[in-house]
Length: 69
Image (cartoon, rainbow, N blue to C red; front, side):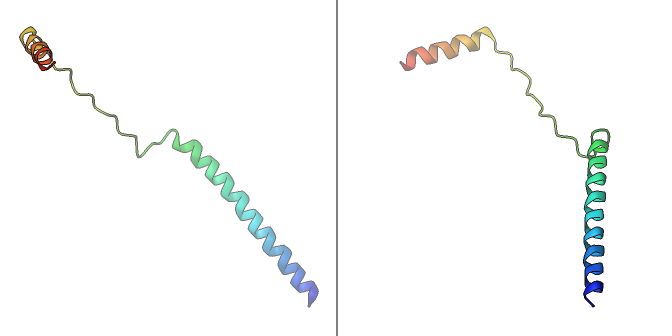
């Protein structure tokens, strides 16, 4: 009876360790594969085009700032 329990204990631990070893190998391989196959790329932030300011608008802003002081 005790011998059967020990055999079952060793068999269960061997199965658990084997599963964890296999899991670590699979996750490492998937990590390497994910570098090449990217299903969810990070979105690229779009920059707004720079607004062109005319000389008249720049002068108007400068006058408004100066008159506010």
